[in-house]
Length: 144
Image 1 (cartoon, rainbow, N blue to C red):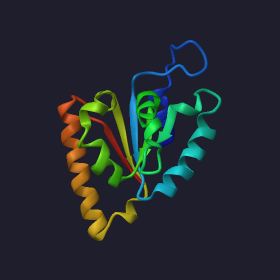
Image 2 (image 1 turned 90 degrees about the vertical axis):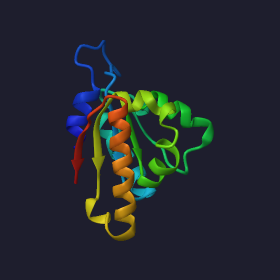
Image 3 (image 1 turned 135 degrees about the vertical axis):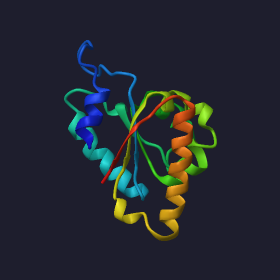
Image 4 (image 1 turned 45 degrees about the vertical axis):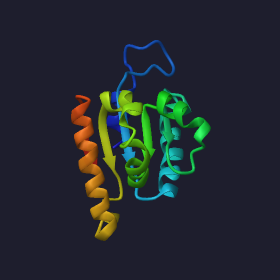
């Protein structure tokens, strides 16, 4: 799923290293640790073309002092359903630039979304879809 996302983010007409489009992607992971692991792998993949700040984790461990910069500069935001529920969706106006450019939503580790956690995630995803529609985006959903 990283290849179509990076293809969308990377500006083919840009001027060299770190040329990006306004496209955004949201990666949802069931755990914070998995998001951190995947960030490292993603940064290695994009290293020849894009700066490390292109992708960032936004979760409960992200320092308050850097959250606004992370959401302002990252084209690929890695988070979890709880952070989406507690921080991003209730304050969606602060994240409008992300929702307007949202081209991909990646739901990784789908087998983890079951029981009460799965039901909670399903409700959060429904809210996310409504907010995307509000901002005029219709992202492609990649579930793996």
